[in-house]
Image (cartoon, one colour):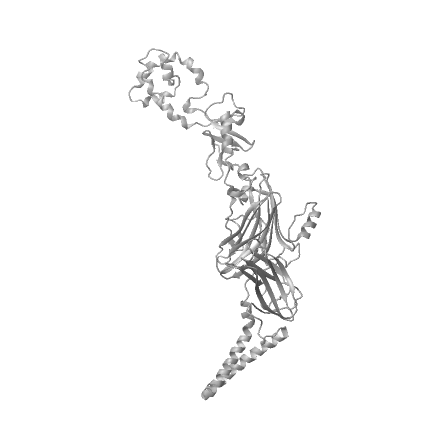
Length: 584
C-alpha cells in the first residue's frame, strides 16, 4: 500500500512540476499589447499590436476587424451647424416633362418630396445653374427665357362650374350682364360643357349667342392675356429675376431650413471627395517639431513625454456635389489585437484631438470579437481637446478589441477638412468600487521580459496624491506621478531593459486616506531574460530554478519523476496479479 502511495505521489509531483509554467502564465491578466506605443521607433507606420485602415471609414457601412461598424455618434453638437447648414436638395431626381435636358424638379434629398415655393413647383436648370418657378400665371412682362409647356390639369375642374349661372342669360336682355356671367360663348370650348347641363337643350342655347356676341369684343382684351382658355392654359417657367418679393422671401425660408446633420456623416457618395490623405504614425514631440520644420509649419504641442499614436486626415471635396460642404468624414482607423478580460474590469485611456483644416470628429469603442457588439468609449467633436482620460467598464467577460476612428467636420463649409487624433496609455484595470490599485504585465510566463510594458492604475485614492512603481532588488523607479482630482491614475510604462536574472519584486504604491496602499508582484527572470514566474501571492517556491539551463534540468527531472511514478504503479499491479505479466 505504501509503495502505491509513493508511486502516486511521484506521478503527481512530476506532473505538477511539468505544468507549473502554464499555471503561472494563467495567473496573469490579459492586457492590450503596446497600449503605451513605446514598442516602436518614432515615425513607425507599422505599429506593434495594432492594425490600421488608411481610408475613409463610413460608419454603418465599413467593416472593421470582421465586424460591420455601427454609427452611434451624436452629430447634434457640431459647432455652429445650425448657423451655416442648409437643406440638401436633389436637383437631378425628376426631369420636367416635355422640357430640354437638364431641367429637373427640385426634391428633398432624403424624403424625395418636391420642393414648392408658395405652392408653385421649383425647377432647376443644371446646365446654367438657374432656378425657375413653374406657374400658370403669365408674368407681367415676358420672361427672357420661355420653354414649351404642358397642359395644367388643375384648372379643368373650375371650368365645368361656369355654365351654371348661364341660365338667367336668355331672360335678361341687358347686354352688360350676360358678358361676365357667361364668357364661354366667345370660345368654342363650352360646346363640350353645354351638353352636360340637364335643363337647356342645344337648340335653346344657340339663339342666345347673338345677344352676348356684341359685348364680346370688350371682353376679348383680358382674355388674350392667356393665349389659350383656362382649360388648356400653358405652364410658364419664371426666371428668378422676375420673381415677386414674396416668392423670393419664401424661397429663402425653404432654402435655409437646416438639414439633419447625420445626413452628411460619412456619406461618401454625397460628399464626393476629390482629395484625401490618411496616415497612422508613432510620434513624439521631437518628431512633430522636426516635421513642422520640414513643412515650414508651426509644430503641434503634444503636451507630454514619450511616444503616442497619431491618426491624421486631410480632405477636400467637390463643393458642387450635394453634400460638398459641411460634411463629416471619418478615417483613418486602428484596431488592437484581441485581448481577453474577466468580469469587473474596465479600460482607461488618454486621448487628444486637434483641428487641421477644420474641426475634429473622433470616435472609439470596445469591440466584442465574438458578438461584434460595440461599447462606445469616445465620441467628440470640436476645435481642440487637450489630453483627456476616459474610462469605460467592460460589459462582460470575453475577448475584445479596441477600435479608434479619427475624423473631421467641415465646420467652415469651405469643402476642406482634416484633423489629428492622439492616443496613449490604454490600460485594462479593475473597476474600482473603493480605494484600489492594479498592475498587469504585457508579457506572460515564457516570454521575454526586459523592456516590455507594465500597466498600472488606481481609483478612489486621495485626490492629487502621489503614486509610484519601483523594481527591486536594487530599487529602480519605473514611473511616478499624481492622481487626478478624482483620485484616479493609469499609465503604461516600459520595464528597464537591464533586468538581471533572478528573483525580483515590482511594487506599486498609492495613498488612501493618508496611508500607503501597496501591491507587490513577484517575478523570476531566467538568464536569457525569459519570465519564469509571476505572482501577486508570493515568491517562487525554492524548488524552482531561475535560469534556462536550470529550467531544462527541472523539466527533465519532472519527466523522469513522472515516468518513475508510472513505472512503480505498473510494477505494483503486476506483482498483485502475476498472470497479467504473461497476458502482456
